[in-house]
Length: 433
Ligand code: SF4
Image (cartoon, rainbow, N blue to C red; front, top):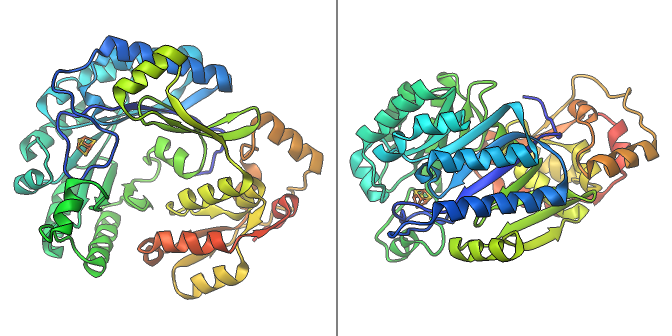
């Protein structure tokens, strides 16, 4: 993997699901009477128009249909959105175009239509290979349907992935080992393996508060995490992010874009975006309710309810938060360039001594990187903050969390962020390691 900060992605949020799962806090809604899909398609196109007018031309290196359950969309709707993205921006020839799918038979029967629409990767929400566990998770598909969907995905798309949830109530280490081995036998080149987290204001949170749902404690959950890392690595799938495992070169390019803090436009109810407009990085948040979003787009051309220019400090915090999820870690020079800060060496030393952090020394010094101060300003003005060419960043020192550090990732991020000191952006480009 190499860092490439010139990528641009489009996230399209489809907000509907057949049924709400009790652990889910995503922006997903059930509409038993259905929805007017032609009206939604029109609104997606209008919102793309508005965003394209704001940021100008781009070439999308990835498009991601997430949800909700995007596999409930008609393939013609997916095709209409992709055609419009290609018309208002452009879509790179080798772009990764992913659609999240649930394994129900109706959705799987649409896989060929999604492929014909331009989708080249699906990510299937399998969640468990045990029927009783699927029922407890509130899922409406069976293991048989999940296996059938994986088989169709394998024969239909260039790439596919599926998700499992572990650290479920009562799950033992041996049970997880067996289930994970079965999953690896079914897997392609990518798997997403998430620990069950109890989100506030969900039915699972209420059950937990009532003492009716007991999830593994931190000690047991960390043991399951270690089993996950060891087993996937033996199978050739490397942990490139906290919950994502892939053969080299098969990482999700769209998700890497988020974690590398690149530019992406969010379209559809509840979508978030980080766009570069007028040389500034802006955060966008879109209305969550599907019908309210439709009304806003039809009135105003977009459903954005918050649009904020991010300060240098906010960008530094976000880069750190996202980048430390990755096994490649965070580039200290990029942190300095983007946010004008560097972590306190004392704090980095403390975290390293505790075995939570690693500092990666470059293979060679970047003595060739010696830009004029105004040259850098010109590049930033042209490409936007944080979008200067990737070359200088690749050979300076990085920090990353260790597997142990991943278990307390939020605390490590907070510690480093609190320690930020102001620094000179140019000095950090010249200094390696
Ligand atoms: S299918 Fe996915 S998005 Fe929909 S309710 Fe279940 S977990 Fe949430």
